[in-house]
Length: 77
Image (cartoon, rainbow, N blue to C red; front, side, top):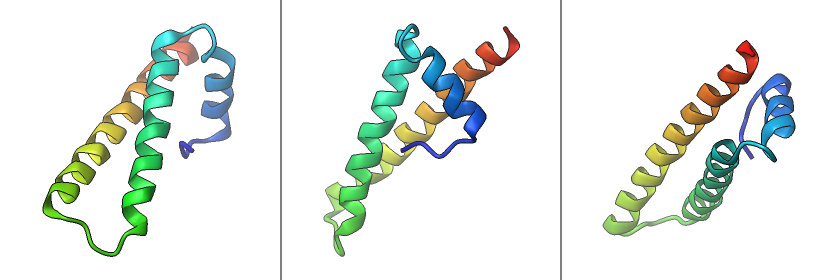
């Protein structure tokens, strides 16, 4: 789950069904979170898995930044 303040969670809930871009970023973020949680349960990762984990972490962060940018648009409206 995305860690956000109640205000952001409310904005997401209000707009996720009408904003395809927001929905896509939220869904991707959740998928990245699930995959990263799986990696975090393992004690050892191969070098390929480490690279994949780092890429997913960066994609997750970028997605969260995009979510916040979209939410800012709704805050200003």
